[in-house]
Amino acid sequence: MTGMDAILHGGLQGYLVVALLLFAIGLAAVLLRRTLLMQFMGVELMLNAANVALLAFARFRGGDLQATVFYLFIIAVAACEAAVGLALIIGLYRHRDTTDSDRTASLKQ
Amino acid sequence: MFLAFALITLLGALGMLLQKNIIVAGLFMVAAFFGIAGLFVLLANPVAAALQIIVYSGAIMVLVLFVIMMLNSHEEEAAEFSRPIQRWLSLALVLALAVGAVKLVMASKGVQELAVRGAATSPAVTLQGVGAVLFADHLLGFEVAGLMLLAAMVGAVALTKRNL
Image (cartoon, chains in turn green, red):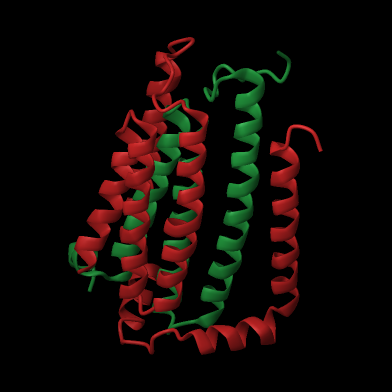
């Protein structure tokens, strides 16, 4: 399967294209949206795009188990990042009463 | 099947990007994560699919939605400065990146060769196999991940508590 056929019926290229478009949408969310929570969700989306590409390559290299172990570590780090990131957003909201990243461009009040 | 899950994933992500209400955007993200879990099932990896649903749709997105509702700022605030040049520039950058990368993947000889060579069905990933690899080859990493989760938990509590 190559070309358009691979994209439409789940060849390696299809998964990679989905991962790339997912990454682009996440990047657009980080760059275009101003709310910190939306930017956070964009980062999560980019992380997931990397996971899709990793597991797609693992499947097409004969079902490599190392990739699933790496995926396990990645979601452990993502969970830590979510907890600390959301705690920072809550702390910021308490100090500034805003979650707009433009309004929090400087550390000083 | 692949097309259905790919469309669920990409439309969910696109809905998140375009949605004004943050709660609805969070629910679109849950749909996107379910789509990704479906893609993992198609990749003969039910372990990753289950983890995706349990950790992302179940834990992380619930935490995000919980924080969104707690902060009580559901709509995006009006822009302090409108930055048209930066916004169009970043949109152009993202589009150029996406189109360029997709073209690169479609033209790559190595990816094509790998797609043909690996097309034969491989055995599905089992939890048993993953556990064996995890504890045989990555025991130190596993322990460090546990320690890091503990540190993140303590850090999150320390950051949000008003007076320790």
